Length: 481
Image (cartoon, rainbow, N blue to C red; front, side, top):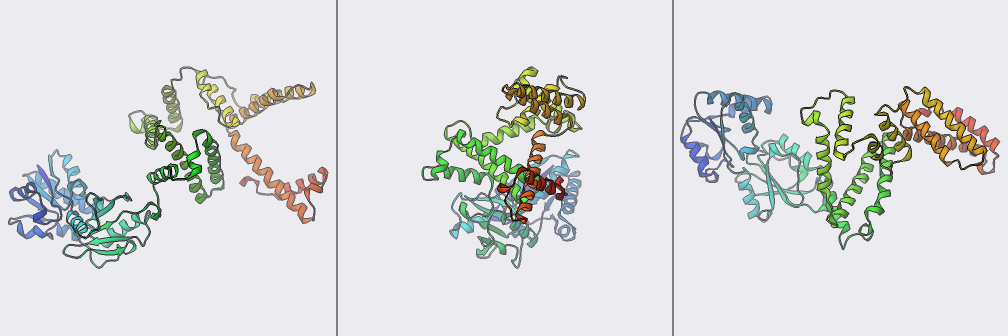
């Protein structure tokens, strides 16, 4: 058996009784390092990994070699391996447990206390931390998470490199002049700017950094949770009058507008614009979530839960044992699962499931695609092309007979959309391209008129047509639209 023991900050007085008892009674004892306060008090033989730390080329190699040494030793006798801080966050402990699982060597864990416990006590004594007001985590386990409402104590920052990695993560949310506090064994807590975290003279296992709580408005980077909190503030009684007045119905047009602005950003390949517009879409999601929460209908967690469940359920080839090695198979499975979720039992239900609020061209193409799923479709674009001309003739006849052309014009658009589908084009997208092309040519035509000191409003249609043809010829790179 391998018993892994957490040594807290390495001071005997901070060890649990169970941890000290395991150290004293171990058949064979290993220490992560002998450079710890209680190293001289062990009073018995042990093996430490200091030499391994010194010669290892990288941390992954260190973990691998240490784990192999421990597992090999455990084949002959029970061993105890003492690690700094919390066993559950110590990467040497994790690597050892994973290595021991292969030959089936059992693992026992004596968790111990966080290495930052003493530093946290010093911070509390200095008045920098309130009781229960801080999270603690080891430097190697830190993933960038920061709850601005609570302090954060990061311990075992044993190198300038590790301090630099932590600083980079914190700077995503905090300003470089944010005041933090550093602690080191037998030294007085010191206030420094965050930017100086990796510029200290010495680092060792006892080096800790405490990041105090931060007001929301003082952050420089924000999370989804921050956005939810901002929306709560805006909808509060003392918040924003306009935001408080909004309802699901009043907001619906904004969601559509923001989605189209995302579309524009993608077409322009403008990444700065894209993340900004995606933020506007996310705001609409959070806005609706807060309104629903106030009416006890649902909240932001329900939204994220719903989509996560949906994605897991609709990707059984990733999260279960279904096989789907091509995009076509993935989409086929997706539609089957979606139909089952929505209780769609036949093809007509599937057509009616296409949202009515969807843009008409997009909705038409989606309906046609679903109808084709049962074989109700032409083979290739030739017949859809004939259908377009057929519908145009019927429209011409209605116009000649002075009838309402609404229905036949709708049939023409539906037929053209069906032709686009057979040509593997998205009607909404190609119409967007056509509109942009028209705007570009019209703008060029007007510039040509201005070059002649004329206004389009004062020109005849024939004169404008001449400039239109010239603009058309001058625009050589229309594909960009």
